[in-house]
Image (tube, rainbow, N blue to C red; front, side, top):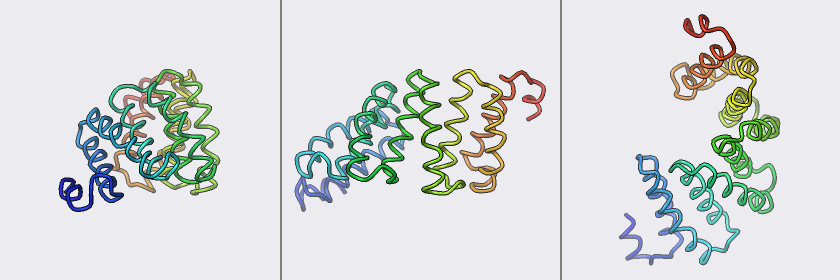
Length: 207
């Protein structure tokens, strides 16, 4: 598709650039994370030149580059890119726009992956009530933030707190997403993990 778009519309036509973004995303989802990162890195300056540095599609390309930077093995790089992106998202789209909240979630996630569990915990804790208010308490994005908060709570040293948060979260995720959804299974595995880490290995075994 992309070569045809480039030939018919030109390499910098908006539809061609949209196809490039899709190709980058699907490249990453297919397992080539470094390839996705590199494709977004090549796309971003074209988006900036043709659409402007604060155009929504340019910001989407920045988010894609940041995300796949982390997925390709550089969590600190992803953290720093999302930290740079967030104030622009908030100014352009609004502090509670879904894209801004997604950037906040990613910043918290990569902060934790880069080694600052307490900082990530606090960021998730600040984000959660906003997502609950904007999306509702059982929206999948809200539940993902709850899972992030629970996990980073444990990694910051409170295994019992993480266990209790996952115990509260699991029945909601099961009801909303289904008992065999990947996010449900991840929450169950986390509950088992933090149950054991909180000092009850026999219960963890039986879970």
